[in-house]
Structures are given as structure tokens and as C-alpha cells.
Image 1: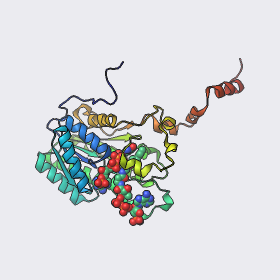
Image 2: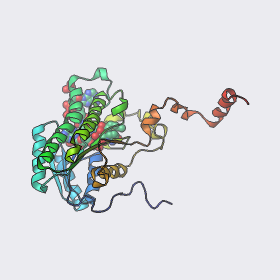
Image 3: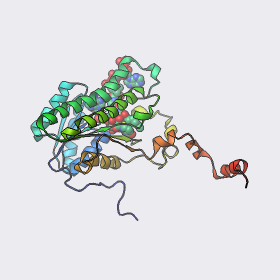
Image 4: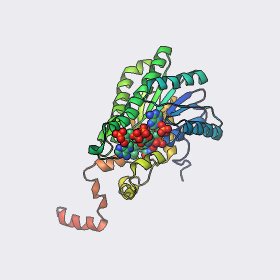
Length: 293
Ligand code: HXC
Ligand code: NAP
């Protein structure tokens, strides 16, 4: 039996001692789970979201659960002045910022021809503009202060395959991937690293309430869609995020790590649908199709 479980924390205690990490959208879902784990590894944490009450409550709970230091501040990442105010508060409280997790997002399913211009703008602005607002604001400070830094953005696997019914999110996430690769090439000389995680399905209230159509959730049955046959656990994503933000990944930049149990490849491979064929059907098919010696 393996001495480790996939739901165990992976990194050494103290990995983030003295480091300050900003997580956008850190009051809920995956951002909150990553924040919790980083606090247990010694980080100071800054979280933001649009809803002040949600952020204040999450900050208080995270500090209480871990004994760590958490600054929670309402901030709409689409607004550069609010992003600057968030960073100023972070620098004032903790002296510096070392890492950024671009996690805030907006998304919902909708046939594209039914989307209003405002609906498209809203999602693209949160996902893409929010990500580059935060990245540029912090990057400029790091370059001016001659400080190294690590940026991680939460992407999606449809950033490169595309996907119907979530067009604005797909366009935004595709842009985040290209921003990451572009800046990894340009800002390596400043000691700034940028990477992306592309998760498959990890249950959160925010995603499930907007993306899993009531009554149609059978379409997304994990045992049918995911080669590894299950949904992701938050600690698995937190482990990967912590690694990519930490010094352990000091030679990794401009990459996108997929953590989806093989889901996107299962959908991409032309013949993977043959998974549905039973052993008896294979017997009959091979008897009919395999050349006889
Ligand atoms: C069609 C919709 C819609 C829907 C909103 N709109 N929801 N159109 N179908 N389901 C339209 C509205 O009518 C409006 O256009 C415009 O979008 C803006 O909507 P508002 O409600 O005014 O905006 P706001 O309150 O700012 O809410 C933003 C939001 C919302 C993106 C629409 O869903 C949100 O707050 N999301 C944040 C969290 C989130 O999305 N989490 C999930 C991330 S999961 P009009 O023209 O009427 O003004 C994810 C993972 C994907 O990204 C991969 C999973 C495997
Ligand atoms: P979530 O809980 O809804 O997280 C989204 C967060 O973003 C919320 O805390 C929300 O808070 C914040 N946010 C939205 N708009 C914002 C804005 N303009 N400014 C600041 N904060 C904003 O959903 P999640 O599932 O954890 O998603 C987290 C990340 O993982 C997203 O990038 C998502 O695309 C990605 N992802 C998730 C999955 C999955 O299966 N869960 C799969 C692939 C990728 P407010 O509403 O208070 O602003």
C-alpha cells in the first residue's frame, strides 16, 4: 500500500515561510482551497473578490482555521484602480508580494447566438482583462523593485481545444494562456515566472451552479468522460498550484500543466468512443474484421 494519498498535502512545511501570495477570487471554491493550503505552508495570504461580505468572512475563517495571516479586500479585477489599491494594501500589510494566483473567473453555459454583447464582455473582461490587469500591475512593481516573482493562472483545457456553449470563457482563457507564454519569454530576464494550470472538473458551488444544467448532469458522468473515472479533489489542485508557485519549480516557466484525469484527450481522440464497445462486441468485430492467417 502506498504511504501517500492523492489527498495529502505534498510540500514541506515552511515552503512559503515569509512569502506573500495574492489569490484573486480567493474567497470561494478552488481559490479558497489553494489559499488554505498555502497558509498551512507558511504563506501570508491576500484574497479578493467583488463581494466584500464573502471576502471578509473567508479571510476570518481562513485565519482562524490555519493560524495564518490573511488580508481580505473587495476588489473587482476588471478595474485597474481597484487592483492597484489591493496591491498597495498588500504591500503595506506584508511589505512585499511574491506570488500571484489569477483564479477569479466568470462563466455560464449559453448557446452563443443567445448571448448579449454585455454577457460576452462581462465574462471576457473578468477572465482576460482581470488576469492581465493583476499580472501587469504586480509585474511592473516587481520590475521596478528588482524582485523575482511567480504568477500562476487557472486556465481550462478548452483554452486550446475551444468549446461550444462557453465561448466567452474559452476566448478569455485562450488569451490567458497566450499572455502567460508571451510574458514568460519576455520577463524571464527579470526573474518573473508565469505558468498555467488547466483543470478538468473539480466540484465547486460557483462552477456547478452555472455549468451543470439541472436534469442534464448525467451528460457529464465522470465515469464516461474521464479515463481515470473520477472528479478532481481540491487538494490535488492545491498541491500542483503550490508547487508551481514555489521555489521548487524555479526552472519552470511558460508552461501549462493539465490536471484532468485525461478528460480532454478522451474527448479528442477520434476512436476513444470505442470505450463503449463491450468485450462480446469486440469478439464479434474481430471475428469479422481481423485478417485470418
Ligand atoms: C445568458 C447571462 C447568463 C446566462 C448572465 N448573463 N448569466 N446570459 N445566460 N446564464 C448575462 C446577463 O443577462 C447580462 O447581460 C450579462 O451576462 C452580465 O450579467 P450580470 O448578472 O449583470 O453580471 P454580474 O452580476 O457581474 O455576474 C457575472 C457573471 C456571473 C459572470 C454573469 O455568473 C458571476 O458572477 N460569475 C462569477 C463566478 C463564476 O462564474 N464561477 C464559475 C467559474 S467556473 P445583459 O445583456 O442582460 O445585461 C469556470 C470553469 C470552467 O470558469 C470549466 C469547468 C470544467
Ligand atoms: P468560483 O468559486 O465561482 O470562483 C470564482 C471566484 O472569482 C469567486 O470567488 C468570485 O467572487 C471571483 N470573481 C468573479 N469575478 C470577479 C471579479 N470581477 N473580480 C474579482 N473576483 C471575481 O469557481 P471555481 O470553480 O472555484 O473557479 C476558480 C477558477 O478555476 C476559475 O478560474 C475557473 O475558471 C477555474 N476552473 C474551475 C474548474 C472547476 O471544475 N471548478 C475547472 C476548470 C477551471 P465574487 O463573485 O465575490 O467576485
